[in-house]
Amino acid sequence: MAEPRDTVVLAYSGGLDTSCILVWLKEQGYTVIAFLANIGQTEDFDAAQKKALALGAKKVYIQDVCREFVEDFIWPAVHANALYEDRYMLGSALARPCIARHLVLIAQEEGARYIAHGATGKGNDQVRFELGCYALCPSIKVIAPWRMPEFYQRFPGRRELMEYAQKHGIPVPVTPKAPWSMDENLMHISYEAGILENPKNRAPLDLYTKTCNPTTSPDVPDELEIEFEKGVPVKVTNTRNGVTHRSALELFVYLNDIASKHGVGRVDIVENRFVGMKSRGIYETPAGTILYHAHLDIEAFTMDREVRKIKQGLSLKFSELVYNGFWYSPECEFLKHCIARSQQAVAGTVHVSVFKGQVYILGRESPHSLYNEELVSL
Image 1 (cartoon, rainbow, N blue to C red):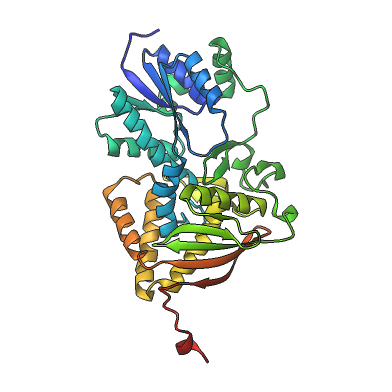
Image 2 (image 1 turned 60 degrees about the vertical axis):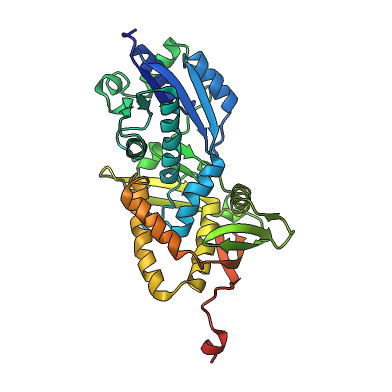
């Protein structure tokens, strides 16, 4: 064991990698405080907490940030109709600054000088975590084990991690690991790496976990009325059964359920990572897909043509900044304010049908409509 060092707050997931990192940080002499964000993923949080404490964490924070995630991060993306490279709805990119915010708050509360994460040295998340933490607390130091030679040379593969886990009493998965990696939150789930790294390989049917297969989805659509105020959804009503939701979190969860049932939100793409390589990613973004189509429609109905042209350019830049990890940058803050200003009159109700993997617009109405039926009539 190394000489005692300072306290580090670890972004902990409960999985093999961050469990091994927790023990490794203790070996280096750090006092470890684990933070696990409940951001809508499927997780046994009690078991994860017990595991972290058993592995030597001094303290474990588990915080439910779902409502904050929707209101402070997803809603600005809805405002922007945010898409990276025309297709990716930024599910992971929006979650990272939310988690980074709490890592910094805990570090400040605990007097910790360091934050650590388990993101790899080839992905975007390392940048998103670190830029977020540095923007919120410039004096913080970030430990990224997967970029440190003393760590990645010791653990060049999963076999070495498993051996280390067994040696140090870290529980290892008893079920076979899926041949790809996954990241889930309330907005989406992503799949990459493993057999998916060959972009020619078709995704297996059993890969998808957040949406059903559109071909076997119900033969009767769900029809929804989605009401917006200032560009944000404030009410969702299912016209078939009268079910209504008004709070941000409740209506988002409900839209996830409806979209999931009908197989809405799947996309298989090759994208350009910020770190300079192309990667293949498969995403499921159920509620986000419904809201993208509904918001786009009510915005076109209520927004001035020239304002909308400018706003589209701002949205493109916003999506790029969010993807690259610049959520807390001055330029991204500026864009968020500009885009929010464009949404002042984006209000009304959109009627949509959700069916067999698709979202269909059926109609719309708004007190701020710029549509003049008398003028346009032939």
